[in-house]
Length: 155
Image 1 (cartoon, one colour):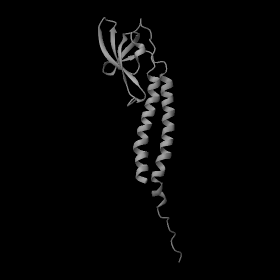
Image 2: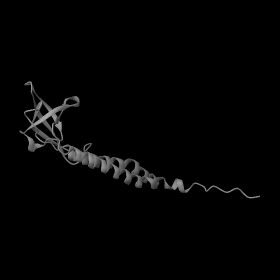
Image 3: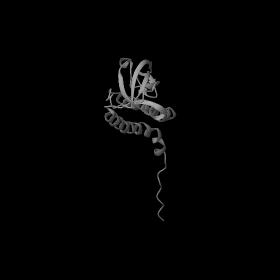
Image 4: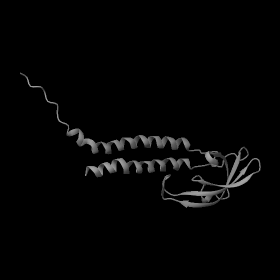
């Protein structure tokens, strides 16, 4: 029975905890505003979206991979794929964007980023507390079985 408790405490709980934390973070992270198109280095326009989910490394729930057309200030136009911050209701809308790692487009304005980080941090602290409460009983028997130190005999 202790083996099942240890598997639950050290494999299943952290995995579910990660998925829930990713869900909380991405819920706020994926909110985007159109931004100032006049000042944008790049404008992203969604052309089509494909629904993904319901469980992924991004957490629980459905999200979209959208093919976008990227229009740069210098006149270049190409296509790319973005994950999460666009959905089918955004097809045809223009968003001010910029490139991040490996040319992955990201919106210029994410209004709820601070709330997302804050909620994820609070969740992380609560998760660590709950995980400790679940994990400690898995090793409690080892601490109880230690022999008591004996006092030396008085002569």
